[in-house]
Length: 446
Image 1 (tube, helix red, strand yellow):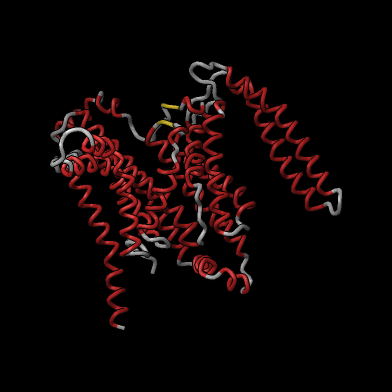
Image 2 (image 1 turned 30 degrees about the vertical axis):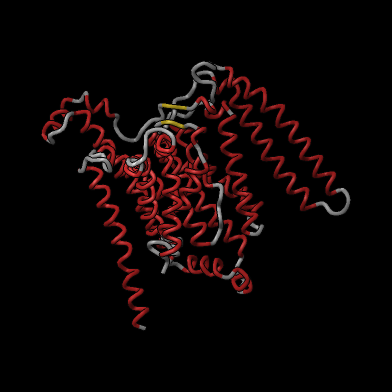
C-alpha cells in the first residue's frame, strides 16, 4: 500500500514539474542570450504559439490512440485538409474564377458523391450474379460523367488569370470561420476513411491511414484550381493586427516607448501575445471538453473498448461504430490545428506538409507526454516542439564543442556540416529515454 501511495504522489507532481520545466525554458529563451538561448521574447513567443498549435494536434491524436487505441499514421493528411479551410473561407474571391467553372465543379463533385452512394445502394440491394456487373457499370458510368464535367471546369478555372491566381479563390469571410470549416473537412475525410478501414486490424488501419494521408497531400499539391498547388497561397487574412499597421499607429508607438522598446520589437511581441491568447483559449476549451468526455460514461466505455474489444462487444457495445466516432472527432481536432497553423503562418504551402514533421513528431509528443492523458499530451507537445526548434541551434553548438580537438577538414567538416540535422537524433534519443525510464509517458494516464 505504501508503494502505491508513493507512486500516486509522484504521479500527482509530474504534471506541475513538467509545466515548471517548460516555463523555465521559455523564460530562459526570452531573457538569456548566449549559445543556447536567443534572449528574445519574439523568439520565445513564436515557439510557444507553434507549440500550442502542436498541442491541439497532439490532443486529437491522443483522442484516437489514448481513448480508443486507433493508430492513425496519416496525421499529415488531416492537418493539410484543416489548413484548406481558411483558404477557401477567408481569402478574397478570384475575379472570374467562379463564372469560369465553379458551378460545373460543384456539379461534378455532386455526381461523384452520388455515384458512390448509388454504388453502395447497388451492392446492398442486389444479390446473385448481377451484383458485380451492376456495381462495375455504376462506377464506370459515374466516373465518365464526373470527368466530363470536372476536367473542362478545372481547365477553365486554372486558365483564368493564371499568372497570379489560377484557383477558385475564397469567400472573403472572417478567417476564424475557416477554423471550424477546416475541422469539418478533416472530419468528413475521416468518416470516409473510417467507413472503409476501421473494420481492419490495427496494423492494416495504420497502413490505410498512411496511404490516405499521402493521397490528400498529393491532391493538394497537384490540384492547382483548389489552392494553387505548389505555387502556394500567401496573404491569408489574420485575426490579429499586422505589425506594420501597429508600427504606423502613433498611439502604439507611444506605448512601445513606455515599455522601453522600439515599435518594431513591441509590435512583434504584441501580435504574438494576441495569437498566444487566442490559441490558448481554444486549447483550454478543447481540454475542458476532452476531460469531461473522458470522465463521462462515454469515456469509460471508450477505454473499456480500448482495453478489451472482445469483452466490450460481448457486453453489447458497437465497437466499430464507437471507433468511427472517436476517429472522426480526433481527426476534426487535428484539422482544427491545421487551420490554426495556416492562419498563424498566413501561407498555405502543400509542399511543406512533411510526414516527419506532421505525423512522426506529433506521435512523439503524445508518447512522451503520456497517451490517454490530455494534459500529458499537451505538455509533451509544447516540450517536444521547444526541443525540436532548439535542437537546430543546440546541435551545431554541441558539435562545435565536440570537434574542437579534431584537426580541420575531413571528419570535422563532415560532423559540423551535419550538425543542423541533430534534431532528428535528438527526437530519437528523447523517445528512447522516455520509453526506457517512463514507458507510460512523463504524465501518464491514471
